[in-house]
Image 1 (cartoon, rainbow over the protein chains, first blue to last red):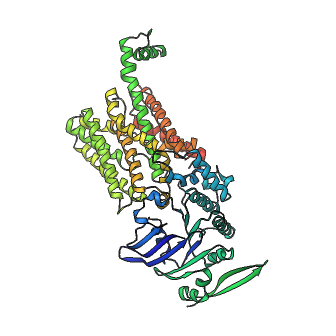
Image 2 (image 1 turned 135 degrees about the vertical axis):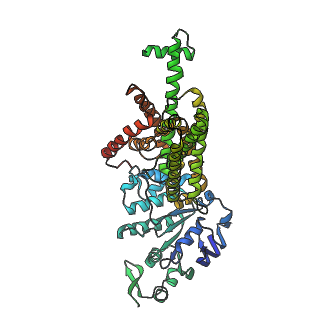
Image 3 (image 1 turned 90 degrees about the vertical axis):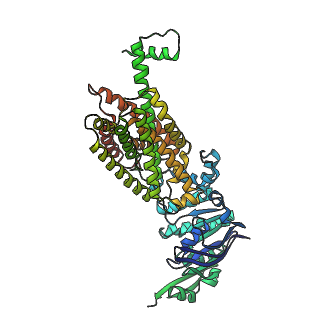
Length: 268
Length: 307
């Protein structure tokens, strides 16, 4: 079943076209990767999905409802957002940050209730961060911060998580921890994920772990190709979009097959 | 006067039988000291709470309640009323209040582009507006009558609660209460407003409306305070920091804490201002002289880790 439907959507900043005729369908329970070079419009598309930017043409539907007819608080109950990097204005406790995910269920002049606190603790447990509950979140690492952001998104109890290059600032291990967490969440909770990324191997990681996944290869305001990681992330497409020589390899290990594409060199 | 005599006055006023006191004592305690203490509590609470709210809103622990120009605007309004109407206290209040609000409206208009109000633009709007109103105050000082009006303007700008009577409290308490109550009621939203605008919106907060509402409440509280007390610096900066160091940064606890500390702090400083020397020292001078070094002490003691 489709959960997000984007039809013929365009967006411009003033006279500058940033998105051109985008069509995409995200199905329930899958990971949808937005992949493409810097400045191709991934972040703009994500902000259109979140209702932060208004497309100049086309329609975006969340579970068959046109996003233009939805209030901010209604969108926040369908889509939760995990930013690329989170700025920490004050040393709030981890639990207080996660609790903020409950704001769309709380009145303007109300405080979060006991149940909200419980929801927040459950979310922290799901990402394996419960022990950090009362730590000031300025004292945790970048990788841990991203997991806290996931926990905050989970407390919104949305069917969809939207992430904008969530691993861009993480180290080797933390990146893997993050991906593992996402795969586990998709498997256990049937949540749907839309994720912008710079790494084609993220999509292969999802495919290798047999999670239903799609990739949209974006280039210069448009979708160049769309389909399974296998169909889209080919050596030819890498050459066409990035002008690089790359090699797709497959490796068998303990009865499982792992696919990766690795870059070899750029063409002048 | 002894403590017993003070208690008797309060007993008489509260209508308890068996209390008796001299009219002069009633006058001093009930008509002069008591309203002044109450006003001090309101003003201190207002400045502290709105300072904490603005710090959250601007994601910056360095801003205070005057960041959007409310103090500068109020100073101009008061100076103008002193020159035009010879310092009728009621008109001074009204002018100070209205121009305080006007200054914030101007800052807000300057800081708004298209449909959003980026933090940095608001701060710059506040800087510009404050600077314009300060210059206008200088202009008014320059043209004011140097024997009557100029001293009044200067004393008003230094801040004092010496004029406090129940009538004054009744007028200015309304905006202060609305502002403080509003901020206390929406204090959890202040946590979310301190997040990046996009994140806050994705969390489900209508940024324009909620931010505007927080600014409105903080401005009502500050303008209400400044119009009766004149410009009292540092309370809106130092008190929120004391709060942060005591109870942390979660606004659900911080805002009520600031309310209490602010109220107590200003009553205390006002008492020092009255009793330190033979004649009264303007309150605004003392809050800065005490507040600034105390702030340094707090920063050193916590090594800046309080925020």
